[in-house]
Image (cartoon, rainbow, N blue to C red; front, side, top):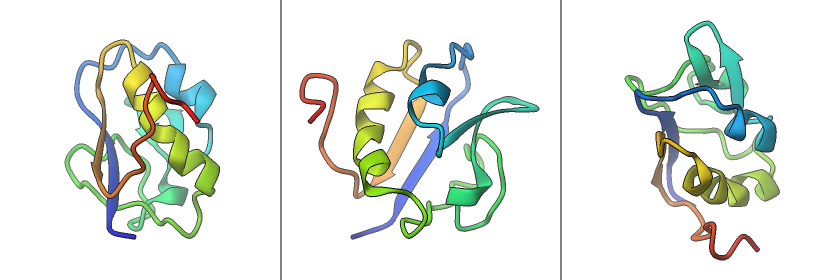
Length: 95
């Protein structure tokens, strides 16, 4: 499995879509929706848009990791970015 990065681009409207569906990954922070430090290799909680820290796949449940493409595809503003080796599961094929 290769490196995986998840980050939030500017334009998030904080609809809580991602925070409700992937609670291990997304959190409401001081600057809006952020990626939890607990799943990032740098352990920093932020949008990860600047640092682009890879996630620690050993702490992210496989079910949630596989579900993130669905979450990103469903984002109303399309600001959730996935880079790297992610499973190809999207809105049209959630399972």
